[in-house]
Length: 492
Image (cartoon, rainbow, N blue to C red):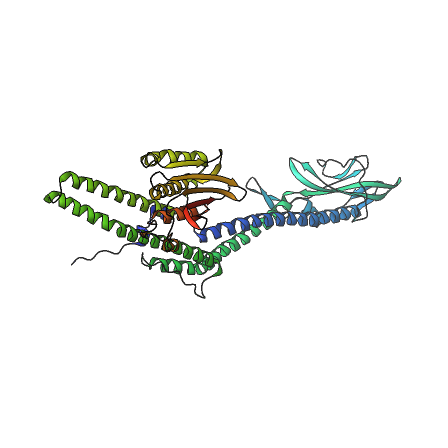
């Protein structure tokens, strides 16, 4: 005995469902990682700028200290100004310091340069390649001396310089000299970049750890959603009972559960409606079909002449077709009106069309028909529903109005809406029919008219249009003089 392989629910799902959008976990990762990554970049840039500023201040202080140290070494010897550098200072200014940075992939060293000049720019000592400072530096607010900190170029490389105004004693008296001390800016940039890359590496590790944590947390947080999905998969197709909300259900899932329960409720109502329609249709069609079968057999056996049998079959078929049409219209009236069936129409033109359509029946019974409608009478809604109501009401009126009797349609428009009345001078409604007026499939008694299915359809169509249907006997001098069936429609 062969066993049927189990069906994979994921494989059996529609292709559109499998190709759905990103998962909630992916959305969380995306929308968390992007802001965090932007924050990391901003923070790294701010750290880089702060580190660069800190390095700038620290090394500027070193330049100022070196300039003061050089200035202290200037002395008068043999009538001329001389500078004697100690051995440690010679090593510093000769470029034997530690590694400072990278330039084109090659290692460069921090080599401090200096120049001592008179105020007019005349060279006194140091590097002749260093351009003398031009102008007069202001008094520095931090150091309290005339000092200028600036950037320049030396041999095509950026250099940070400090220019210090220093008074010295000469054979001519007190004079000022300018002591300039500088070093390549690459050293400072290298330190700031090192801090930047260290910050980026550390925060990148934190970002990865955060994403892993979010992935784990989202997996745990979304577990109730997977449990909910498994509960739905385990339900039978005919199970339309609402889903019970357990205490473990997250608050975020409650709107989904409530919406799904609402959908189940509507599906149950639609299913009950269809079952009721099938039951009503089978109840109404069972008798006409049995009659058709008997009439056909009677004609085939010769119990009745063939022509008479065909006439009976044709009459029964016509009545059955009418019942089928009513059943279909009734079922259609129970469904929500789609937006494409809403249109603006003139009700005067509509009732005129219905009157013209039924005019052969009116003429056959010599009935006096009167139409009271003042055009135009615009109205927006499902026009086919109003036409069906008017047709049913007018058909009932001419069916129960005696030959030569009077009937008509009166269309009025007021502030509270539109009133469309179909009136006749027939026998009216018996007390029993007044009680069971809109009950489907209730037949009339010998005194009055029957309701059948037409008035039940008209009532549901009127409600679907946003209005109502009222049917009552018209009394004159305490006696029934006919029937008024009034359709009330909203103005808009």
